[in-house]
Image (cartoon, rainbow, N blue to C red; front, side):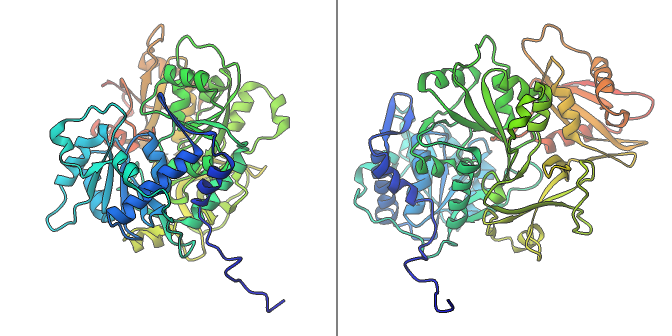
Length: 557
């Protein structure tokens, strides 16, 4: 067998772009994208992507390997660009729409972006960002994405090269898209959310995108031709790979710019939605939507990005949602750990089911290995559900590295072939993993490690609490103590006092975990993907000064 070697017939580079070609053949007349009163079939989406790719590569002269940025909400163009940009040989760089102009400018400059697609609602943001680029820095060509009835200032419109639909109209539908020479060629550049540090540019290859896209479908059990509601921002880790995955199974992508609880329930019923995804903040939104009846047909919802509190899971599932809990990070593109459900768990009480489902779980099929290790020794921690360690991952899902930052890449990916995630967790005796905190969010109080996630989960069970986040506050005696930031439900019959929150936590938690400070806010600060910005809250807690044994801080902001 030594003469049997790889050859051109069996070595075609893996890429998720081929999913679109197949969808145009198998599901050509089936709906692909729905947005308000606009809808396309898979055949039409394939043609539109080829036309845009042609315009990018030929008309605009973007070369293979150059970066093309997109600042847009979940509109059809955003979906199409996940295919069109890499089909032109370029590298797709999605930028979230809620960043400030300075941060967007830094990303455009750092990535050396040659072209930027701009949603009409982000036109001022991006134009301001472009104006902030340093002298002698190449300016990316701006292309405007509008709805059918755009609300665009004429003077601003003149500052754009053309519209997205111009590229569709003038592009070549017979364009032969640029296939990667190697499956290790970059396909996307994603910047981290910056919840704990400055954003870093994460580069992923065609091979990784292909693996994660199919793996995510298999692990979630997504059937052919689902109806997927885009409540998860596509700019967040490429929508956890589901833009490509929906093409693989011929799904219908229901797009929307903005949403709230009533809008989600309306679209679920209007389009017979079967699947959706989002951070736990989306679950909280659904479970707190007033005056809604439980769904007649179940909707599968994938949640991740932060550990979902068990009380929120329980309330969401009582409305007819089937929640699947996954874990990933920008550096692995999509879901690489999930709480694989066992049929016998269905016989357990609802509260126990929610507790089990709040665990992150086990590696997905295509993820090579996960472990929880002592960061000092690199040895696996005990599988006792108590021993803390750092979560490490290896497999085809792992990034190529950080753009222009070899030192950060080497710190994150060690010489033994593990990606260190920065997340702290435990391994249970059944092999299921559970996140306890980000390494930078663990509160060390009097020598005890306090998991902010556990304290938050207890707070979410309070009937009046809408959102909860717990961070460290300096303390004269203990070093630091838990400080709870809370927003309350609008429909709460009575607002709890700080002392009532303390007493409630004393009944639920060990004494050392009980918050020593409580701050009520109208809304907690979040990233564009729904993650609470703990670094902002840490600064507030720090500015409050040290807490003391003599008293407990009671603040309203």
